[in-house]
Image (cartoon, rainbow, N blue to C red; front, side, top):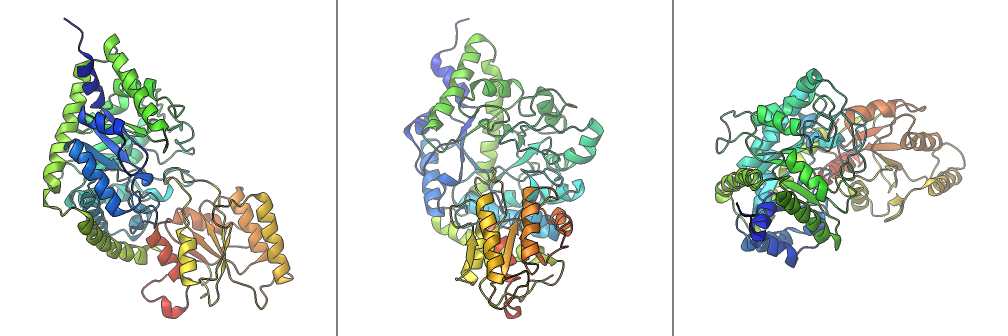
Length: 537
């Protein structure tokens, strides 16, 4: 039998790839790949500066290849692509879990689904079905909560809502990323749990999302696709889950018939971020159908893509991978694309429809935030004067691609004279923090908040006792015992950590995340009582 031609191999290889790219117009190499059979693309925040630009971008992509899957990570809350610049209208999973109204969660998913479809996105890489554990550096408020049944209930409801809105769903990060203590964007985490624990904790939400419950829009389970995590689960096998054959086999055993998608292969858990060739081959060997390649947000995107194409093509030529193996993955992707094409047929599309969908999403988001964001500790004082805002968050949110400043922005919108520490683009290093403490001491001439002192609002995310964020907050509390905290991390853990401060639990607003809706609701609780209508404890 003669060897397959280069064009045949290229088309087969392209059928398992989901590259990213830079800018808001598709580069030539991407359009050529789309015409040659590329499975899809993943959009990041740098691709989607506004809704009209996003709609034009996806129209160009679908013009090149009508069946191209356009995917993005639009979780709402902290991780948003379509609303990254201004902040998400949707508070996010932790807020939905805190409210615990499955009907409202489904409404949120539907409103988000309509926005996604309106701008031409086919597949949302959401919901997050990880069961969170306090201290997790990458999941946190992206999860619905710490209880497996609650996560299962709201994960399925959110996914069903997305589907009603016309979008595809991708449950992540299988078989569970919630109990890790390291960030897979930076290193390879380990989930050291036995099989019984996995089935009682981590797998519960995924099993629920993969069940055919008869309430879907097209007889599909709540999860149209499944994203695997870059975590090692020794109970399942020695390789990262995204490369481990036993993990893909487990997904099939749970009833998943759609594509298995890897998390981004440029993450440091599995590659050096520059060459993803070998890890791409291993992922296909491990049972993955679609490989997210990630993005460098620069000229290296094409090199990243070519490293995968070349390695996979070589694997076919040497017999390490077969064309039939790649064709099987393509069939699953094609079946999903056909289902999504039918599903989005009843949803309005285009820039005007997107603006209407965004307005509807904002209404739902404001209701969720009003019910989720709350205060704990001593009564939060009404701030009559413009406050100083100190952001103590030390770690970049790699999943979001930034450390969001929506709380600061909301404060400045309400009190234009508010001071920000650090200032825009600056980092609050040790020297700057010590200087800030000295300024506060000098301004107060002691420890009491005397006349003329601006109120002090402190933004936290992980004030874990013994950590730098907690230590800095304790130092501020010694100088300004009247400070108010806006905690943007996991609410239950945050309250516990803040209560461990030497000065006790300060007046605190639990924002359940850093999305724009969260920030606006949190700042409303700092305003005079006449502005607090409908936002409460």
